[in-house]
Image 1 (spheres, helix red, strand yellow):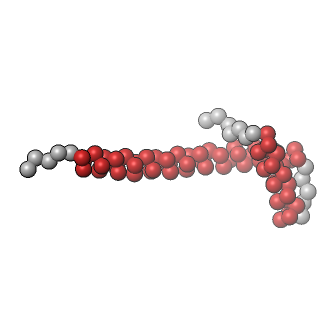
Image 2 (spheres, helix red, strand yellow):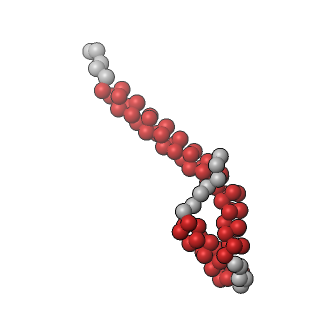
Image 3 (cartoon, rainbow, N blue to C red):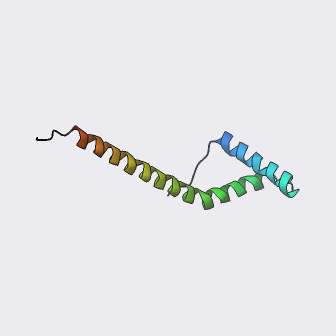
Length: 81
């Protein structure tokens, strides 16, 4: 699987949110580079799991939709009396 790529603006915003979190919750200041490295770590660790969960949700939704479609098609069949 290829690595998750974010637009520069998204990456900067998330890195800034990480910096703000560290300051507010931990009383620590971290630099932009450290926040970016932390973001890269989380993307690598969490990204595949979140991606796979999203695919599982898509499979479930597709299965439900196909079942519903199959029921609709059966309802259209002509029945011999």
